[in-house]
Length: 171
Image (cartoon, rainbow, N blue to C red; front, side, top):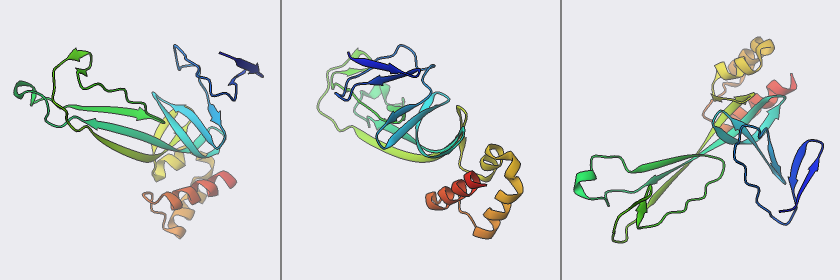
């Protein structure tokens, strides 16, 4: 696999090669045209905006719902598989579930996708709320509170949150 090393960075060639790592602890940033992904705790998030070591990011989750296709003695268990990160590849075989072979009839597998905006400070993940902004920009607390009050920021509105983040990064 052709890999170029420049300035402490490892770059794949434009041929679309794949790089396999045995540990993700040393990954600090993944960059591709139009996208930046950073680690946040045990997850990887897609950066929307950033200011220093603070980001406004997307955390993507995927839940695979197997429904009630398993035998009666197993019905009490929850057959949902949750995956969290930036991108997902699901390799699923009808005849296996966590390595256990079962003979099955065809069934539907429901995928539930969710995208949640989050903040990261360093490598830590925080929910989108006022206290997270105050923690991320501690020297600007008064200005942030004034901006939130004056603009009636709804923290469930991605556009308003992006506006607040931009305000904080320009102070």
